[in-house]
Length: 160
Image 1: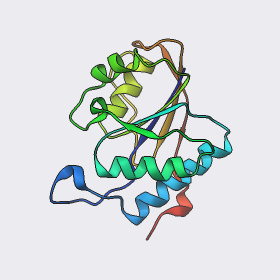
Image 2 (image 1 turned 120 degrees about the vertical axis):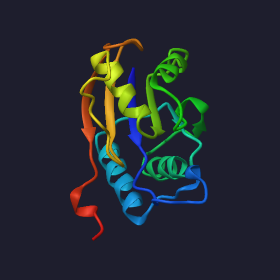
Image 3 (image 1 turned 90 degrees about the vertical axis):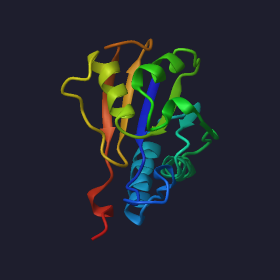
């Protein structure tokens, strides 16, 4: 199984409700840059799960628009900003596909990356906005995965 953990792009710092924060222009460029890298690497996707927050929904839409034959995103509660990685792992145990894209927030994505690859959250790698971690594993479990790579937005897309 391949899990692709995509943190939403840079978002507005404030909104009337936290879940309503939109991507900034820089965030749109971050996500597009990583999507192009993903597409050029010829990775494939069977399913996309996304948080209900607007910035995550926008990230998924932009990312998937760059991917040939991409799946439609499905919103799941387990990816909400207030959820924990252990709950998400239980959900993923029931998913029977090979290539899964998860679009969400921190701390849940960075925690999930740490739990799957190290078995704990000590000294975890913190995913920055727009970054995508590629994790390969046979089963969902503590320390059972290997992080193949982390795709980062191209520095040339930053807005000054």
